[in-house]
Length: 161
Length: 388
Image (tube, each protein chain N blue to C red):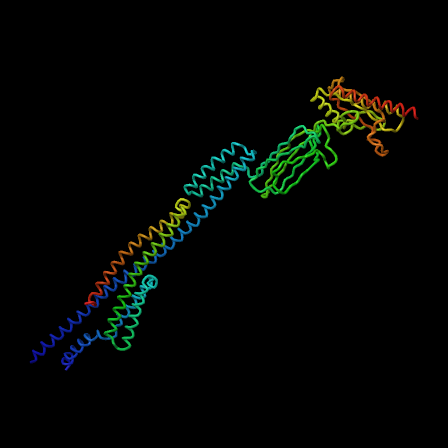
């Protein structure tokens, strides 16, 4: 009897496993939300406002789809939201680097125009050292950003397939 | 049949396990990627914060450096202009030591060169050093002309030369009379001003618009200048003398000098008046071509012949002292005029008439004029006597 029951449970277990994909896409939704929050931390609101808005809108659609029990659609929309969130994140990072560099370069140029490099050498050199350090970190950030983009691309390939 | 079931069961179990393992592996791979993502994102976030902070700090420092440089530029420009103005003033005033002025000018050149290289703090140091060569308190000098002053002939002109880095808030110019052999001098005139003294001051030699300064006197002029920072400078005492000056009278040129006075019925030359006689002596030394009449006077108390004798005694006392000082007797004429030429007719001031006066004889005609006058005076006295 028990053997018969066990044998009957195996297909049921397998069916549960197979159908588990059609449940509420909690993980995808969480990932999308994390992507949006992370992009906000790098000033996406300033540097990638359209992408951020799009990611937020998609996330909102996904949650609505969950409410309407359209879990399969919700999963896809959540994945799109995450992808848009990541896009906002990388764009913001890139723009941020450019913006920071431009702003600091401008203040450096202004200081040089006032001959601060000769007149107040200590203060100018201190600022220059900080700027140089920041630029090194910017290069590092670029490298790491590219690595992350590749990782995310790899991660998203099965989804796109 | 039983064997077949067993085979089916085993196959199903194996398929289930394989599916489960596949799902588990897929999830594990996704988790690994996700973990890698999180780590990278955390690193990126940390870098982002660091870059943000460093850039913000660098921007603030650059801005601070710019503001400071602009401020220093302005300060250096102002100080250079001040130094240039100061050096110009110093060159004009001629009271600043030339070596110091040269040193300051050389430093000014260095400061200008540094300014061209935008080395403003060094510019400020050089300017400070240059200004250190120029006095921070007023430097004052005066010139007085003529050295031998004759009131009424021409004014005594006192020309100031003042150099002050700060604004002049007050000045006092005083003329003091210095008696021979006396350490202390007595102030006789003073001018005070609260605006910069730029023009020369002319003095007519009068003490209060009426009394004229004594002739043959030694005087000193001193100018003191105060600036608005509490500094002050003195010109030092510049000497001048009043010439022996005279008033034209019918009997000749009466020397304007304080009269030499005598006690009642006395003909002794008091020590206090010896200085006056000495001044006349000094004047005659300077002008060897001039001669002098020493004329004695008396008040009108007593009888005229006695007064005549007394006046002659007084004139002789003064003449003797002049000779005692070294004067050649031949240059001195002595006359006693008795009570015939009183300086005042007021009874209460009768003492003013007990005196000796001096008549300057510039040429041979002068003694003739004098003697003619005396002759007429004697004639008048005789006529008065006959009338009495």
